[in-house]
Amino acid sequence: MEVAANCSLRVKRPLLDPRFEGYKLSLEPLPCYQLELDAAVAEVKLRDDQYTLEHMHAFGMYNYLHCDSWYQDSVYYIDTLGRIMNLTVMLILKYLNHSIGYCIHLSD
Image (cartoon, rainbow, N blue to C red; front, side, top):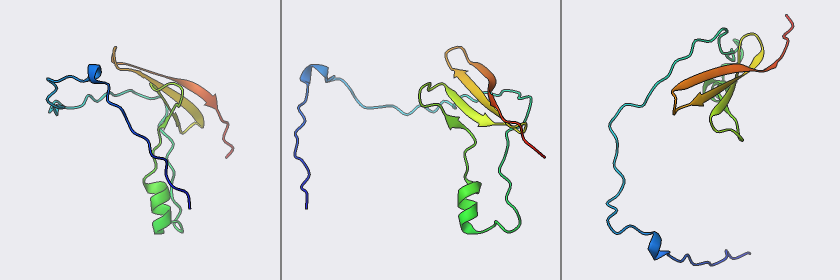
Protein backbone atom coordinates (compact mmCIF):
# COMPACT_ATOMS: atom_id res chain seq x y z
CA MET A 1 0.00 0.00 0.00
CA GLU A 2 1.42 3.35 -1.07
CA VAL A 3 1.30 6.33 1.22
CA ALA A 4 0.54 9.76 -0.20
CA ALA A 5 3.41 12.23 -0.18
CA ASN A 6 3.29 14.88 2.51
CA CYS A 7 4.07 18.39 1.34
CA SER A 8 3.61 21.74 2.98
CA LEU A 9 2.61 24.94 1.24
CA ARG A 10 4.31 28.17 2.19
CA VAL A 11 2.40 31.44 2.14
CA LYS A 12 4.00 34.35 0.28
CA ARG A 13 2.98 37.23 2.54
CA PRO A 14 3.84 40.03 0.04
CA LEU A 15 1.18 38.66 -2.31
CA LEU A 16 -1.64 38.85 0.26
CA ASP A 17 -3.97 41.85 0.35
CA PRO A 18 -5.00 42.59 3.96
CA ARG A 19 -7.97 44.69 2.76
CA PHE A 20 -9.46 41.89 0.62
CA GLU A 21 -13.06 41.36 1.75
CA GLY A 22 -14.04 38.52 -0.56
CA TYR A 23 -15.63 38.13 -3.96
CA LYS A 24 -18.83 39.94 -4.89
CA LEU A 25 -21.66 38.31 -6.82
CA SER A 26 -22.75 40.36 -9.83
CA LEU A 27 -26.48 40.42 -10.49
CA GLU A 28 -26.05 41.78 -14.02
CA PRO A 29 -27.42 39.45 -16.71
CA LEU A 30 -24.93 37.47 -18.77
CA PRO A 31 -24.53 38.71 -22.34
CA CYS A 32 -26.13 36.60 -25.06
CA TYR A 33 -24.91 36.86 -28.66
CA GLN A 34 -26.65 35.54 -31.76
CA LEU A 35 -25.26 34.64 -35.15
CA GLU A 36 -27.28 33.67 -38.21
CA LEU A 37 -25.89 30.46 -39.73
CA ASP A 38 -26.21 29.43 -43.37
CA ALA A 39 -26.94 25.82 -42.30
CA ALA A 40 -28.37 24.49 -39.05
CA VAL A 41 -26.38 22.53 -36.49
CA ALA A 42 -26.59 18.77 -37.15
CA GLU A 43 -28.48 17.02 -34.36
CA VAL A 44 -28.33 13.37 -33.39
CA LYS A 45 -31.75 11.80 -33.96
CA LEU A 46 -32.75 8.67 -32.08
CA ARG A 47 -34.47 5.80 -33.87
CA ASP A 48 -37.62 4.24 -32.41
CA ASP A 49 -35.60 1.37 -30.91
CA GLN A 50 -33.11 3.70 -29.18
CA TYR A 51 -35.19 5.11 -26.35
CA THR A 52 -33.50 3.36 -23.44
CA LEU A 53 -32.11 5.26 -20.48
CA GLU A 54 -28.57 4.72 -21.79
CA HIS A 55 -29.47 6.22 -25.17
CA MET A 56 -31.10 9.21 -23.49
CA HIS A 57 -27.95 9.83 -21.43
CA ALA A 58 -25.67 9.40 -24.45
CA PHE A 59 -27.63 11.51 -26.95
CA GLY A 60 -30.08 13.56 -24.90
CA MET A 61 -27.45 15.55 -23.03
CA TYR A 62 -25.08 15.90 -25.98
CA ASN A 63 -23.23 19.20 -26.38
CA TYR A 64 -22.90 20.08 -30.06
CA LEU A 65 -20.14 22.64 -29.44
CA HIS A 66 -16.61 21.30 -29.05
CA CYS A 67 -13.95 23.54 -27.52
CA ASP A 68 -10.59 24.04 -29.16
CA SER A 69 -7.82 23.03 -26.75
CA TRP A 70 -5.30 25.46 -28.24
CA TYR A 71 -7.52 28.49 -28.90
CA GLN A 72 -9.90 29.17 -26.02
CA ASP A 73 -11.99 31.61 -28.04
CA SER A 74 -12.87 29.00 -30.70
CA VAL A 75 -15.45 26.22 -30.77
CA TYR A 76 -16.39 23.72 -33.47
CA TYR A 77 -19.70 22.19 -34.53
CA ILE A 78 -20.96 20.07 -37.45
CA ASP A 79 -23.71 21.53 -39.62
CA THR A 80 -26.42 19.75 -41.61
CA LEU A 81 -24.30 19.96 -44.78
CA GLY A 82 -21.60 17.81 -43.14
CA ARG A 83 -19.13 20.63 -42.65
CA ILE A 84 -17.04 21.06 -39.52
CA MET A 85 -17.56 24.71 -38.70
CA ASN A 86 -15.29 26.90 -36.59
CA LEU A 87 -16.83 29.64 -34.47
CA THR A 88 -14.48 32.28 -33.06
CA VAL A 89 -15.69 34.65 -30.36
CA MET A 90 -13.91 37.89 -29.52
CA LEU A 91 -15.69 39.19 -26.43
CA ILE A 92 -13.70 42.41 -26.29
CA LEU A 93 -15.16 43.55 -29.62
CA LYS A 94 -18.44 41.60 -29.26
CA TYR A 95 -17.59 40.07 -32.62
CA LEU A 96 -18.63 36.62 -33.86
CA ASN A 97 -17.06 34.97 -36.88
CA HIS A 98 -17.62 31.52 -38.30
CA SER A 99 -15.85 29.68 -41.09
CA ILE A 100 -15.60 26.20 -42.59
CA GLY A 101 -12.96 24.15 -40.79
CA TYR A 102 -13.32 20.97 -42.86
CA CYS A 103 -15.91 19.60 -45.27
CA ILE A 104 -17.25 16.04 -45.15
CA HIS A 105 -19.28 14.92 -48.16
CA LEU A 106 -22.30 12.92 -47.00
CA SER A 107 -23.72 10.20 -49.21
CA ASP A 108 -27.48 9.65 -49.37
